[in-house]
Image 1 (cartoon, helix red, strand yellow):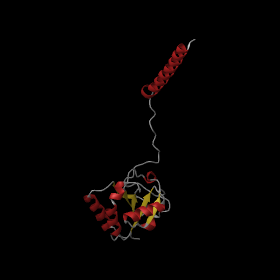
Image 2: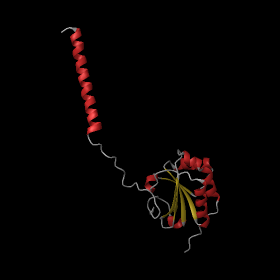
Image 3: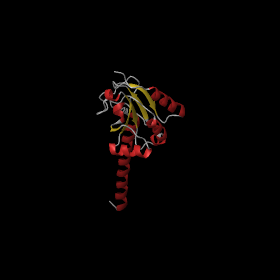
Length: 177
């Protein structure tokens, strides 16, 4: 067998191998059913009336009275853009309402991020935002003394929604009893 025939045989084998591999890929991609990605069962969107009791370790809802949870991420540009609004919330007199920031980043990074934004809160916690039902940031959650969600504001809020949040907070009074 001369070198020309050997080269032709190797070339034929290589072409056949590539054709077989391409066929397998095309069959798997287009003819076989694709498995549906499963979502973790713990992922539920937070809604009014949902209980967060036990979802956020170390937060004493009863002691807090009412709690405004800031669900943020230090890498979220909408969170950073909302900084002036969060400052406004923190400056409001808020008898009976505690401010708690929850971020997926470590607590020290959370403190640094909030300091950079100029936002003072009562507590900073690290937790998966999915664990409290938050799917996007920023999200504000107003929680009552039982750990139940009273109100939810998602995303970077337009001015009229910011005013709504401030109005709700101004109506807050210390919990009786």
